[in-house]
Structure formats: C-alpha cells, structure tokens
Length: 72
Image (cartoon, rainbow, N blue to C red; front, top):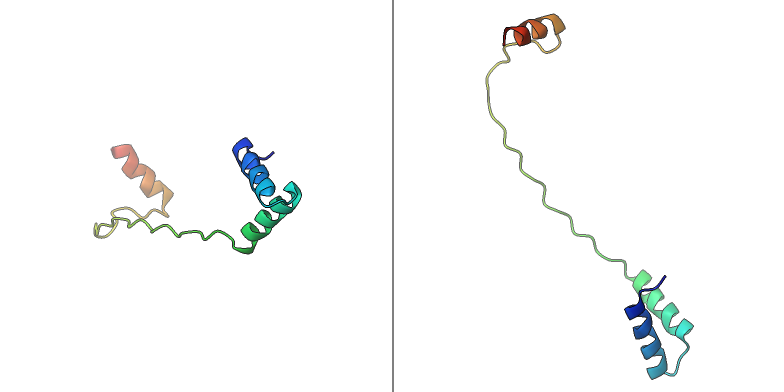
C-alpha cells in the first residue's frame, strides 16, 4: 500500500505534468532505485579494559574453579 500523503503527491504531480499516475510512479521508483541510499557506518564503541594481573584460577580446570566459587 502507498501512504495516502504520498499518493496525493503523486496524483498532483501527474496532473501538473499532464502524465499518467503510472508514468510518474514508475519514474519516481526508477530514480529512487538508481541512487541507493547511503548507509552511515556507526562509530564503534570503545571498550574499557583493565590489567588485572595473572588469573588466580585456571578456568579450564573445572574442579579448581568450583573450589574457588564454593569458598566465596
């Protein structure tokens, strides 16, 4: 469906140019598709990092990790 305001504008333009509604609509679509909208790249967020030294637990050792978590 075409938005009502857009449809009225297309009809007004077609009448003003003595052209059919189809011809004006097709021309507008061709022009729009010929120049695709530019997409702006958003700036990447900077992540804050901290140096925390060596890990106190080997995360690949499940038993050691569970022992430390149980003590907390």
